[in-house]
Image (cartoon, rainbow, N blue to C red; front, side, top):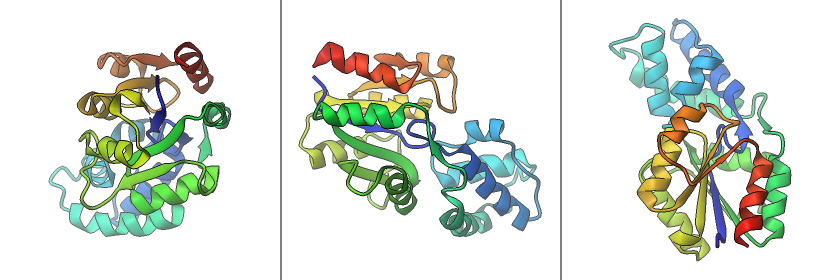
Amino acid sequence: MYRCCIFDLDGTLLNTIHALTYTTNLVLARLGLGTVDEEHMKHFVGDGYRTQMERCLKYVGDSELIHYEESLPIYMEEFAKHCLHQVEPYPGILEMTRFLKGRGVKLAVLSNKPHARTVETIETFFGKGYFDAIAGEREGVPKKPDPRGVFVLAKELGVSLEECLYFGDTNTDMKTGQNAGVDTAGVLWGFRDRGELEAFHPKYLLENPLDAEKIFGESH
């Protein structure tokens, strides 16, 4: 049934909240502003670093976004240095991806994280060539929830949309899958809660990564 699994990165494959919060707070400190805690940060990330900075600036009191334009290059500078800060795969992720690869399933990553950092992060934890395709935010392809990133990956990997299953932990991910016309799997180990995911009626809701084995046991 499914020949390709497309994964969100932050909050799905890897717990990156420490790196995202740490980097953002370095930016805010350089601007002379306050800090953001990790729990709030979980709701500020997922839609690209520009939206993330906009939300964080408003949270610390810059309601007029006076520091917005200034913050963006600082974020890119700091994130290049700290994107791996305390990052780790969620328990069961490595086992799940090995299982899928063993079943001949193609693996891809689609993230709103800047493309270079997406590739660096994935290759650091999984190795070069482990994933069949990796796509972060890049010029010419609108960020999620626009479906074109999914279309590009499906074409690159030679699979139909019906053969793709998209995994993610946020409403942006569920919208991405819906907009692309692919089945979705909401993951409950990430940054958002069950209610947010259930509102978009994913085909699957997974309590832990090894639950994916049941899907492929049923459909393969």
